Amino acid sequence: MKRPKLRKASKRLSCHKRFKIQRKVREHKRKVRKEAKKHGPRKSRRDPGVPNSAPFKEAILREAEQRKQQLEELKLKQKEARQKESAKKRKLEATKKDPVRLEKKRAKKAASQPEKKSPKIEDKNRRKCLCRELNKVIDTSDVLLLVLDARDPLGCRCPEVEQAFLCSEGKKLVFVLNKIDLVPKVNVEKWLQYLMNEFPTVAFKSSTQLPDSTKQEKRLNKHSSHTAISQVRTCTGDETLLKLLTGYCHEAEKSIRVGVVGFPNVGKSSLINSMKKIRACPAGQTRGLTKSMQEVHINKQVKMLDSPSIIASPSNSALALSLREVMDVETLQHSTTLADPILKHCEKQQIMLQYNVSDFRNSLEFLTLLARKRGLLKKGGDPDTAAAARQILSDWTGSKVSYYTCPPVMHQLPAHINSQTVEEARQGFSAEELAKDNKTTLQDVRCPTKASSLVFQSAGLTLGITEENDIEEMDDDDVIEEKTEDEVCGDEDAEQDQTTNTNVEPVKRPGAGDPRKKRLQKPAKSSVTVQSLDLACESHEDDTYDFNTDYVASATISLDFA
Image 1 (tube, helix red, strand yellow):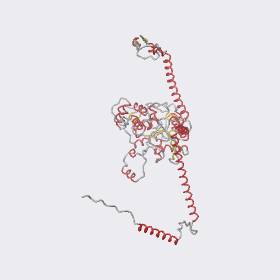
Image 2 (spheres, one colour):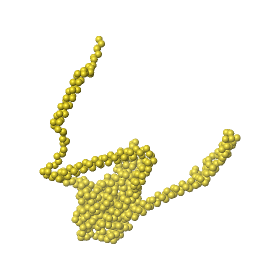
Image 3 (tube, helix red, strand yellow):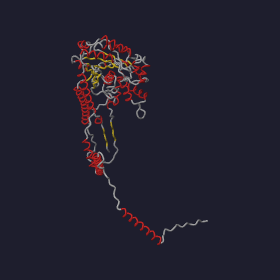
Image 4 (cartoon, one colour):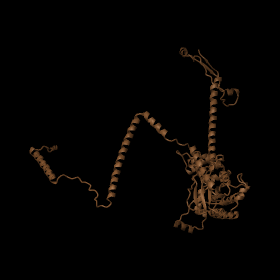
């Protein structure tokens, strides 16, 4: 059965009902107006202000005025910022439409920016600052401690620094043989005996971790009192060095300044921290971390001066530059060339055992094997040889690799030292007492055996730079060499161009000059007979190609036109 449609209610009203509603609305509005007249007009709420009886009325009013002024200033700033933004948008739209104006704006911006200094100029300025600070330490110090790495003491000596310090009278030079825990005891004793023939030498081991004053550390020290000193990572040789310096103080009858100098990563800042028992100077494995002179008070009589590293001269060997040069190893581009001389001065089997690598033919193959072993890979799985070379440099300058060098069999004084300076250096201390103290420090330190350490060939004394003029001359020489190389290359290219231009003659073909003849000539079969261009084979001479002879001009080309 079909469902019937429902009718919607009509919205139409009768006239009686509509007029009644309108009348009621008029009456309601009239009633509201009458009530409003009775109560009067509504008064706006006004701030009554601060009453006169209130304390600190003036201060409160002043704060209110300041707050009001701040709000007004903030509104003005916001308005100005909105106006600037709208002006910028308008300018950007205008410049986008006009490309000439945009180019002018870019050129103006580029001209206003200061030119960046080249890395060579920055490196030159940095070297000058380091050299200046080093000279300050040498001039102001009464006693100079030349810190030597016990693994290669001869390579850590700088004749220029020793000569510059010993020129002035009344100053003492002392060798500090640091990192003795990385060298066999027999080798350390030999080096102490060798260096004591020239200047007083102190065996030393810097503390890699300064002791804490917590209760747990004290309890551990009580239980492990029988362990060796090197296991607890404490300093040894500090008492011997302090005893020697106090002896110099009594001799001079005044407080002394002790300068600490040396090549990078020999442990200059670590030595001062070990003497002070506090981390007073920044120390780390990065080369050239100390950039200025720093004074540290050890006690009332001794003041130590931390100095930047000695700058190695570029005339040194490749081995000396790779180990002693002041540079940032992490930002090196050609680090593989610096790791090559280190590998050449060691035995191949010992290197293989140290890094747990299979047999290799050259240094590049070793770096690829080491990179794969340690997971140093580039994008795509290729071995990163540069990163492997940087790791080798940091291992050998740091304290990860234990290697040693043997002292010379016969002792000979260097050219910059004479017998008189040696006799003056022996005054003010007892050589026998110093030897006994060094022996006690060696007994307390755990040293590696010869089987577990690598044999290394030293490159000898490392030349250094102590004057700023030497740095300028060095940079000028580099520029002259680059210019001469460019000029030679340019002259060779010019000569080759001249020879090619003079020897080659244009080959004229019949009908090539007049374009009308080309149109009139009919295409015909041409028999081209070309002789062999390899004239050297016919004359049975050498196979080398001679650039001065023109083989094309000498070849005979015959064209027969029908």
